Image 1 (cartoon, rainbow, N blue to C red):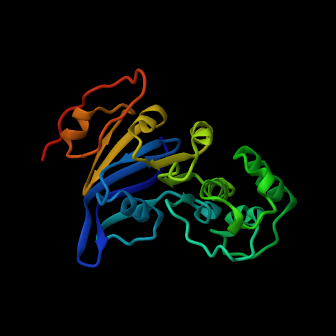
Image 2: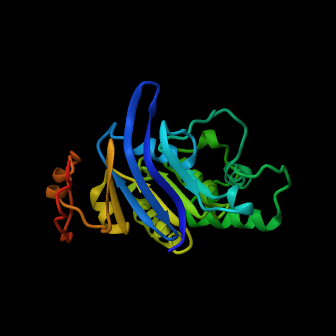
Length: 250
């Protein structure tokens, strides 16, 4: 399997506060990793280290990208996207801005790229909003829009921090179907508190609670969560297969 990102013995935090300790993780092409863990356990910090927004206190991060891949290597959908609702930009322009996000050269958007943006808006069910100002959109509509923005450059790795936070129930099923389709051509890392969703969609799971425990399985149980000190309640509907993994050594 081709490596995309490799973290080795990462310790990271903010100021004097250490959030992650001795974390190692390798992301390969077409991985679909679900990241779970308690609030404050370091999930978002892990994402920030992978993206390059946070420099680790120790350890190393290595990216396996060359040439133009370096500029559009990672697509990122944060849990909250901060913006000025009064800024005069349309939904279509927001999506197209993703093409320039990792590109150092300022250039005009091509007709092919505009067509791609329209296709993404259609896929996300917000095509009818393409000329609307971003400040006029609901939280769920903006989340779909920012997802379009994060994938328009066809990154090799897509990172999503709780993408279902503002998504309505009607679109939630479509969202994960889209992510599975995207996973055929890019690796995906997804943080979620919905353990049922994680089990149903990802290929492997990592629990982050200061340390990182990685499992080559998409199945998780309450016993398993307790085994590696990951205090999350497991709620499922219907018949969800499960297995119990070995307890982690302290």
